[in-house]
Image (cartoon, rainbow, N blue to C red; front, side, top):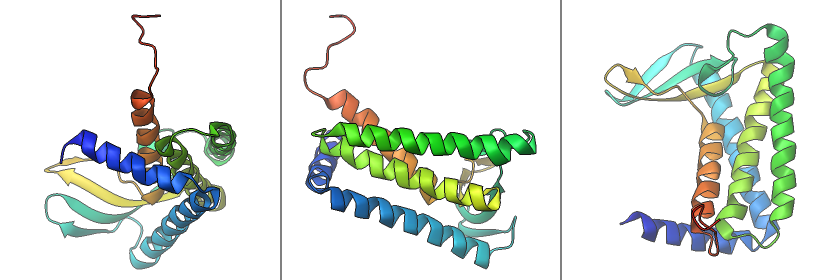
Length: 181
């Protein structure tokens, strides 16, 4: 299947879902619930630092506590910054996403579907960071000795949501090109 067909089907699916704010709220709540549930499962099943091979040479389940932000950035920052500034920035991000979502009005389906994904992901990581001081990451993909930084359901939701926003920005009819400007 080519990318444009998948994008078209994704857009139609999201357009149907985006017709209902309650469906969008349910999507966000489901993602948030899945994120918190999977993090709790990992914390219960695996010791901190433990790794369980799932697909040899490609995928492990791990239990990592990320005190920084994406990819461990700011992990070595002073405790006050990690404990107060990072959660405050995440909370500000949640407020911005909520404000943008309210402004979308008749925006396209993909665009409207992106916001609950981003919001649920940000809320899941914010909740854990605020109450535990770290975020549990557990999905470890790698090839040979190269490991992508471990991540979780919330990170995935944020990434997919941002991807939908970017894809939607390229698909909008009536966009002016920089050359025409």
